[in-house]
Image (cartoon, rainbow, N blue to C red):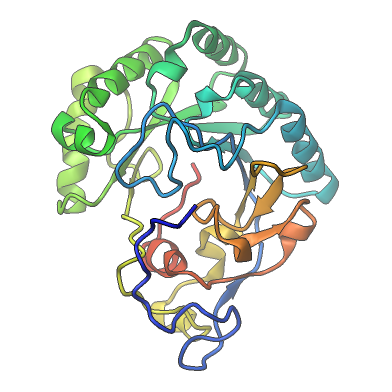
Length: 317
């Protein structure tokens, strides 16, 4: 999947999962509070974004559709392992491309979990079957379901630069439908535009207020602004000493509280990954079960440093 990816510039770094390039002990993170289990519903998407970290597109099926029965198996494993999970997240690709999306969400909601679905709110979500299913879920589990809509910028021109001409208007149309149905919405944007945090959030606030979307632009959990995941940028490796230097706890890093389940094309069964951001890195595949996924994660990738430890980002709600 990475044949055409830019070459990593961190020469000599991120080669040994136990030690850094200068011989120091690499930092690792224990699964101390597994509160979110993510399911990748498949990499197929109705659009192809310029900088999609997972390379989703209308033709990329490297991660195939996961099924409702496979999701239920992992929900059983959560109970068997006594994980204190509060949230089940669904990401893609575009989750509403998966025909089992409504059934999978209901399976999690029936067991009392909060459900977070990441979507572009475009045509796949707006199909009649999906709208009917979402309406039923909202009726039965109001307050437990959140849809996080990908809105790369509050202005149409910059959003469309990433996602294609006309995509902003289609996404806003979907958000209006969610608004009218009383759904709880959040938004995921990008920080690549050179704006400071306050300017970005004020821009989103103006948009949300104009449409009555009821999203708090100044709440980082409701309006998540993700740093760009550029593997060509030089980043430092994270050593065990960094926790004290940065005054940061390993428990605050995403892999201390989350795992992701994927199903690879041609695989007999799904696999559990340490990180939602590294779907194609073999080192971060932990096995097929949640028991295997309880192992420590060594921070042996540029994303670990830039996105999580230094950027402080998290995919969870």
